[in-house]
Image (cartoon, rainbow, N blue to C red; front, side, top):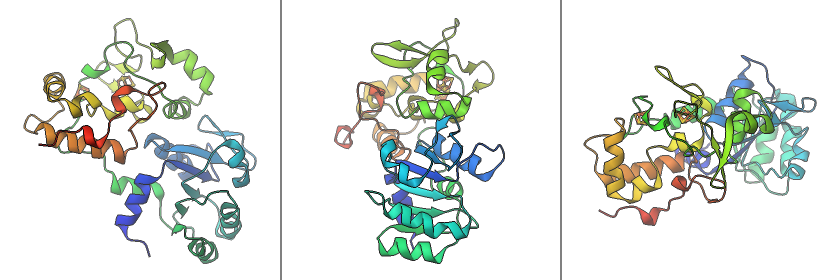
Length: 292
Ligand code: SF4
Ligand code: SF4
């Protein structure tokens, strides 16, 4: 049996999830869970023997096809009846690299698949919903920040970088292929792809009185604000951000804010590493944080 603390750590470590039995069926559990995981910042690969795509993402036809698609899953999440689980476990173990977790969704149990995985050193979860467990571990609130949805941070051109991890989420949201999303909603600025603004100077997706109209699919920089590198490492930037953003706690110290911000970025996989395609604001390391 796995302790919840270990499971939580694995969900933080994992970046990529293959969803076996993925399909675009509004209202179906797999649709809900797939979109939730995308929105939670995971890189998701739908896998289905017949369907060519799900949630705007091109699907792999089998687990065996994942390596040629350049996708090494950290979690394999099964939406398949019990009798198929053992076969899928064997397919997973034939991959060049073993995943961290083999996850059978709520209502699915397979002692045979579990035994194969356990023998190979892969953690197994049975009969639990990945979305429910993730929501339980990461409820999305912090002590030093709580958004008031005033929209001040949605104004200004060029700041909302759309990185490689954001595009699949937008595709899934709009049910459009990447080329179409890029043409309709983005432009290139300073060598990066960014969301376009309307004539009022606000992001295309900001609706006065209603806030962000694509909130579940918004890019990583929007998810991360106000925990931007500048605000985490520099006290003056933090003080200025607090002047502008009413969601930042008036009483938190810079260090409290920075430590919590770093935890938040890590838990939600928002930290970036590629300065050429991702937001510079998301590239930050532990040793840059204030010490006192
Ligand atoms: S400025 Fe702050 S409180 Fe207002 S919408 Fe942006 S993050 Fe939320
Ligand atoms: S995507 Fe949403 S949160 Fe981000 S800038 Fe646009 S309206 Fe604001």
